[in-house]
Length: 100
Length: 170
Image (cartoon, rainbow over all chains, first blue to last red):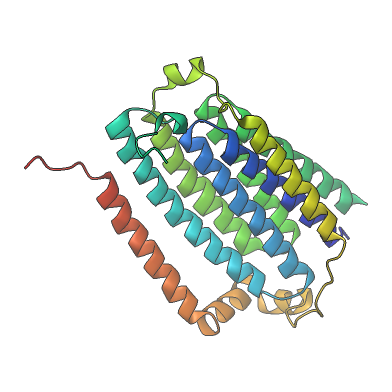
């Protein structure tokens, strides 16, 4: 039997890699993929907890996370297309019109 | 023993593939490594007796979301992408932050105390089948959140069309 802490360690490792990718990549599409990576890490954690606590609610929550991830990808990529049409770049460090 | 070995392989592969996803210069390579990563994560779900989640992991993520990513990657200027530096100038900050997060949460895992187990034991799920147990819970106790999820998907469809639509010249 694999202990629960192994799954949690794997989950936080993938989450940390996703955080690194989101904070340091230049390409906005890779940043979106890092967000998907983080959501997947959360899903691994939820489903392993659901298995070890013998409760299906974790899997229901993972189900909703997948639904939100799908809609987030659709909206995010639509924003990328709109940005690309105005600016012809996918690099976040060149999008500085708002001076934020 | 064999279970630990299998988990070890899949955990190692998942970590290596996630590193490959965030470090490849060519976005198409990143998307293809991510496809392999999603298959490995689906196998992990099979280990956890969640076969329905493994199925929708492959159908929704590998079949839907990654194809969407691939379409948008094709709109980009890849030739220019391969010339320039792939990380922003302040990438050590991101690395430090991610490592700090990793260490802090690893420290806190030790203090995790599991709640008493619920009623959905492996025997019960095997008797009732996984999809039936999940569906019964989803359509009774979680009916309201399920409807909200459908509304979120509707908003995503309309929002994506409105955002990506070409402005009409007036």
